[in-house]
Length: 479
Image (cartoon, rainbow, N blue to C red; front, top):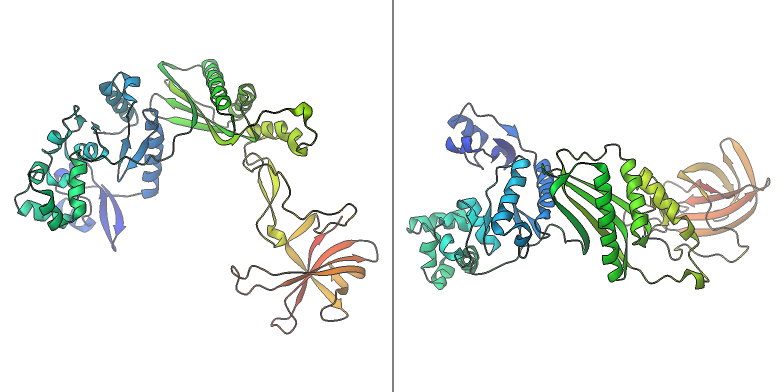
C-alpha cells in the first residue's frame, strides 16, 4: 500500500487487492491500518511520478483514438467513436487496448459504453466489458448506488432508505430526487444510466496535421524505419500543401509493441513542408541521439506530426526585391539545431523590458519566431549606437567625480585606472521596475569618451538626498 500525508496524518493513498481483503481502504490512517494488519508493507506515494506515468499512458493509448483523456484518479478515458473499424470492430479494439495494458504491466478493467459516465461506472463498480447498443440503461441499473460517486452522506442516506441499486433510483421520480439531493444528483443519475451524454475533454488537442503508420508485422530494422519515415513525411507534405500551410516543428513518435514510446522533435527556423529537407534533418537528429532508438521486439506504429503551423504563401523568389537577410542562414541553423539540439543554437531577441540588461535575451533559434523587424529603436546612418555591444552583468561599481550634482562625470576610476572624460552625452533616465522591486532606484545614463578615445556607458543610480546616496556604475563598453 502507498501512504501520503493528508490532514496532518499519514493516510493510505492506494491499496492493492490483498490489502482490500484485509479491510484496509484509502483514506484510512496508517496507524489504524497497522492496528488491523501489522504485517502490511507501506511505501511513500509519489504523486508527481504517478501523474507523469499516467500522462505517458494517455499518449500511448492515443494510438486508439485522438480523443484520449485522464479519468482521475487512476484511469483513462477514450472516445473511440468512428475508430473501432480500424481494429476489426469493438471487440478487436478492446482486446488491442487490453494487450497494450498487459505489455505495460497494468491490471486493467475495460468498459465500452455509449457515454463516458456509463463506461466509468461499469469499470469502477461493475465487471466491465462491452455494452450492446441500446442496453446501457439496463446494464447500469444493476450497479450499486456507489456508482454515482455522490458525496458520502448522500450514499449513506440512500442505503438507509433501502435504495441499493441505480435501478431503485431510476424507478423514483426525478423531481423527488432533485428535491432531496439537489438538481445535480438527478443529472448525475441520467449521465450514469447513459440517458445524457457529456463529451470528454482530451488531454491534448489532436494535431491537425498528422500521418500514422500502423503495422500488423512489427518492424525491427533501422532501414525499414527510415523508409516508413520517408513515406509519412511525403504524406505530411501533401496534407500541408493541400491546406497552404507550413510547419516549424516536426515530431516523430515510435511505438513499441511492449507499450514503450519515444518522441523526437526537429524544429526549423522558417515554416516549411519539403519532405526531403525534413527527412535530412530527422536523419541528423537520429544520428546524434545519445541513446539511439531501440526497437526492442518491434515497432508497431510510427507517427509524424506537424506543429507550429503557419500560412505558407507561394514563394516567387526570382521576383523578390527585398528579402529577410537572415534567410540564407536558415538551412545552416536548422542543420546545426538538428545535430546538436534545439538549445545549442541561440539567437538574440528583444525582451519586453526597458532595463538594458533585460532588453535582450538569448533564445533557441528554432523555437523563436523569426524577426520581421527590430523592436529596438532604429538609427539614422552615421549615428552612434545607443547601446554598447558589451554589457557587464552585474554593472561594475566605479568611483566618479562630477562638477555638479546632476552633471555627467568629469573623471572616474575603474580597475585602479583613472579616466578623464572629454566628451559626454546624456542623461538618459531609466526607471527600474518598481512594481517588482519596491526599493528600485532610477538610473541616469551617460555615453562618455575619455582622453584616449575609449568610450563607456556609465549611469548614476539614485537621487541626491536619498539614503544611501547616489552611486556610479559602468554598465558597458562601446566599440
